[in-house]
Image (cartoon, rainbow, N blue to C red; front, side, top):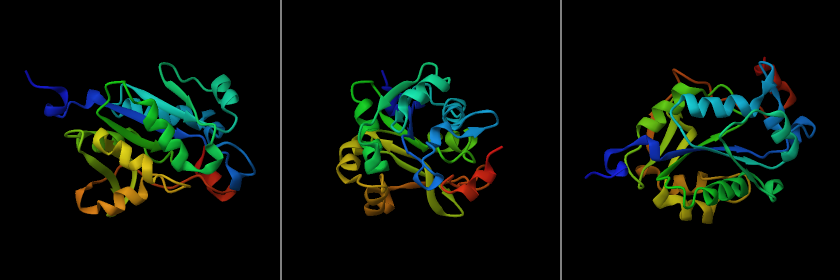
Length: 204
């Protein structure tokens, strides 16, 4: 009998949404709560993961986590608090990967709450490149690595050990550049971030 990971079964890949940031350059407006098409941005990000093929979704919360829970409809998501969210994205990635321990997940597909231009089609492409716990896959935009990123479970400990500040998995992936499968998504997604007041023009 073949195992799910041997067949590249994407049901063993969990979506991991990093949504803890406080929006410092947005005047302290948490990115998860920014409105996009009438609903909090975190809802759109979760829907993109689910529509792209992630049945299981973990969401890392930080800034005003109680308000996010109260305002956002996040059914069937595992909501994970990062008490150290002010230390940067690296701390949220560590907490998120830790929350997947014991879930049966063989990989994590990591996305960021402040990239609404990245939707289900990009998620599905990256997810479709999953092969095993050794997989390292990244969306690419005109050949430049971006999100989402798929991290096989064999890499979680190494990623967590190097995830500091706002670097996330960047250092780990850079050191293993040749092992990372790039999946071009520039034709189906836009990799802009909502970082400053000027970027709010991307939101409807």
